[in-house]
Image 1 (cartoon, rainbow, N blue to C red):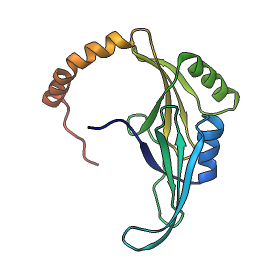
Image 2 (spheres, one colour):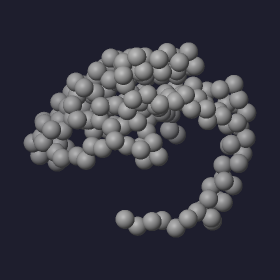
Image 3 (tube, rainbow, N blue to C red):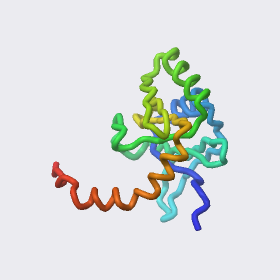
Image 4 (cartoon, helix red, strand yellow):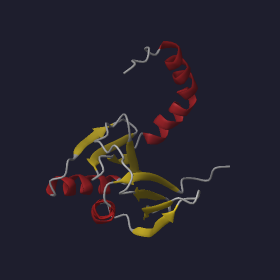
Length: 164
């Protein structure tokens, strides 16, 4: 049985820039970092792996690998985003803080069951802070009942994939 998220791991351009965003701006403490000097297959490498902990104990983790090319690009919300749960007071505070610091700050978007704001981290990843609305429980309960039917309908009616 899966108990929950331990960590998600992503590449980063620069570990200190990443720390300043996740620890300095979002307030997630840096709880572990270690250098990897040899891969499990015995190849020499030089990688830093760092972990930023959330209140529930799970972490967002990053790999800085200067010697290995990686296509960093500003991600579109539909392609990749990291959504983090906050209360509404924190959502409003972070919205104002992002604006005050001149960060790209989008929102507040009302999705019915959650309200969200969006930032972009130094690596191009979209970070969504999300606070449940008062209707969240009812909407998610109905959503759970309808999810398989919605998915089946999507599979039967979705447009053909566009090849690049």
